[in-house]
Image 1 (cartoon, helix red, strand yellow):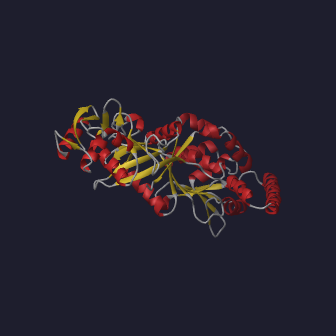
Image 2 (cartoon, one colour):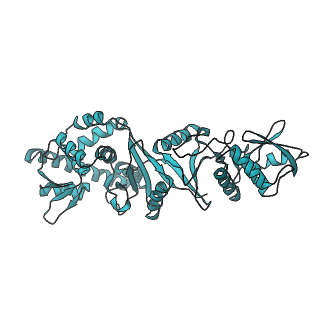
Image 3 (cartoon, helix red, strand yellow):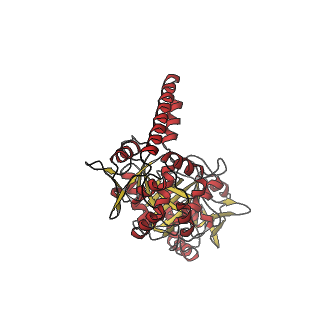
Length: 417
């Protein structure tokens, strides 16, 4: 097909195709009103593949014109061409989708670069399933933007994909999800639905027995000793009560148990237990000490507390380059999630994001970034507010006030297209 074109902003108006406009629109290219309008990416793809010829200029000259109109046309076109080569129907969002990513996490086009349709579907037959945000590997992405993209996806009932073009012009796709955890209670409920009635009854009896044992242990603990002695050992805490140490380690998966039956706890673990009223320390002083040693302690503790309150087992994620590794259930052999805690103002470089996701993917875990939106002074006061006598009521109070925790989680993973 051979025609003439005019550039109107980031649109290409094509005329003189002698009735072939309908054929292009039917194949998912352009919008037909009183004339055929193509995006820069659509026109470039049709030119490069020989499906369209423009009288005034060749493909190279068109690219130069397109770049003069839209500085980010290069990365946008590489993503568009990659998706078309994979057999997808792709539509530009808005008038070219704006700037896409930017050096400062720049926003543009409402966060949408392209609409991506299910494989085999055409625009007009089915709604788009995904929206794609486009980046170069040199761009930066603010953590807050990940939350905005998730909110946008929920409002539009779409799935969000990040497309990153590297220095070799290869495109890597990442999917964004709101992280949803399955805690101990969730796993028990799920298991009940899959088992027969007899097994369910047996499990219910076992649960009742365990609950009675826990209540007896708590009552006995209150009578014998309300709080256990601890000792600070640099940037960790030593629990000296051997009985409590063994119970916390074997039943609740806290810390590391020594041969002498002493429990080595991290600051976040010790703070959580101190807030539960199990340790003989001034909770306020302990928080102040931990904050002086770890500048990001409050952020990490807020996330740790939220995860523990929801029935998850939380251990250090240092060996995986993250703050925490998280288990769905206490007896699970391998952790399911890697959690990295960041300040809400954090800005990712794309190599940083890629490295974290690749590492998690390589060890069959899900990469989750977390942050809490709080003012430090207000959060300190809320931390010190409660001091219950056991883990059980403490955990229940946390679950009850989960909406006040305001911990946000976003999962980032590789997307296969």
